[in-house]
Amino acid sequence: MSTIFKRTQQLQKFSKQLEAQPVLNEKAEKQPEEKTLIEPASINKPIIEKEYKQHKYSTAWFKISHKKLNDLASQIASKPVDSAILQMQFSEKRASNRIKSTLALARDHAVAKGLDRSSLIVKEAYVNRGTPHKRMDIKGRMRTGIKEHPHSRLHVVLTPQKSIDQQKAEKYSKKLNKVRSPGVVRQSPKIINSVPYYNW
Image (cartoon, rainbow, N blue to C red; front, side, top):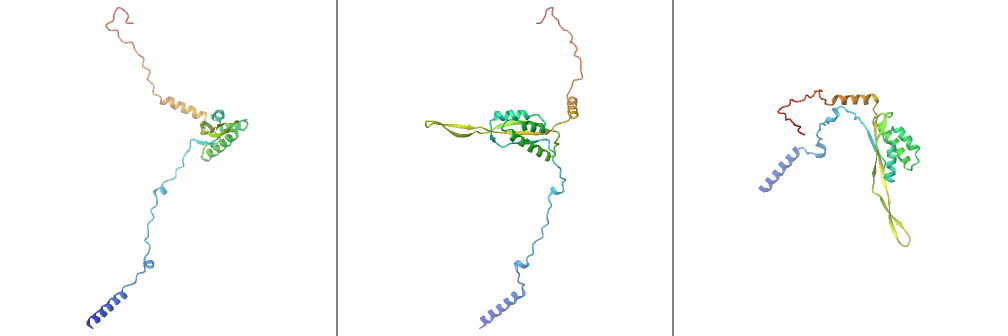
């Protein structure tokens, strides 16, 4: 009986200790830790707008010979954008409509970048030759061949044209930066140990 009595006393003490301790509900009691937000350094920096000096644009790959497209590229190169669009508007070539829309879109993109529309010129116009698409060429008497359809595209670079005063100022600054001699006059050296006949 003594052992049973001791065990009951121990159980009663243990139950009292459990009642004294507060029951922790992990979901209810735990509070989220406050996190300090670190602001990135880029927020405090001043925003500097990028200045564009040119705009590059190109057509998609389309079915045309690179030789035919190169003729149109040489026609619009080094001309103002508006006059290049006018050239393509009255051209009888099949690809002129595509190039005209490409030039108009490139002009609008350049204006959106901050370039002056009135001074835009086509600085470069060059052609890339693509891989030709091969198709079957059916002939008579059970014979076949291979057709090759050429594909190419046109690249255009638009830049603002400099005024005459700016061109003169750049030319003058280049002349100033050139290294020039002070204009020393070369003197003839003294003749030493001369011989009575010519050396040549």
